[in-house]
Amino acid sequence: DSGVTQTPKHLITATGQRVTLRCSPRSGDLSVYWYQQSLDQGLQFLIQYYNGEERAKGNILERFSAQQFPDLHSELNLSSLELGDSALYFCASSVEDRVQETQYFGPGTRLLVL
Amino acid sequence: DAKTTQPPSMDCAEGRAANLPCNHSTISGNEYVYWYRQIHSQGPQYIIHGLKNNETNEMASLIITEDRKSSTLILPHATLRDTAVYYCIVRRLGNQFYFGTGTSLTVIP
Image (cartoon, rainbow over all chains, first blue to last red):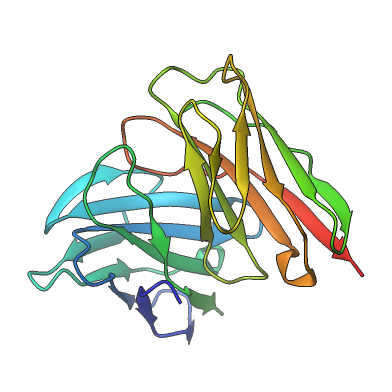
């Protein structure tokens, strides 16, 4: 158990819909990262937040957005969902935002878009 | 980020050492080498990381060549629970991880 929690574990929805994935980082961790893992793309970095502010962006679609709240939990919002958005979504956290920081991953949310 | 090259799959007998190689020939001086593994579809699990020196922890050892262009993760006594996909990641000053395709390790009884 990494200490990172994600809800829900599974999510089934239809194309065109909007969903919100939630992540609670390890106690004391200020930085949160979101990753997407699909069968054809592997694990891809989406976005990072540090202490409430966006720190870095990766391959995140414009239909996706995220935020980190004052209590440091984070939400990833996926809108206008397409079949190709079906994937595992992982959240990771680290204490700070330094080079040697180890990231600890949550168990993931499995999203299925029908 | 420096790219990494790993063999797509490997087998290892239970109880023997598993040696997983990684090539990162374009690594630069400030980039760390990280190893994670993913069991089935669980969240990636941190194993070990290093910059220049060899490292050892309770899970594994990391051997980095002197020129830093390659490294080897060593699981000293592989068990069936070590069957997983192992990712070698080279990370720059930015804190984002860029995962490759990894090595699928199968530990055989």
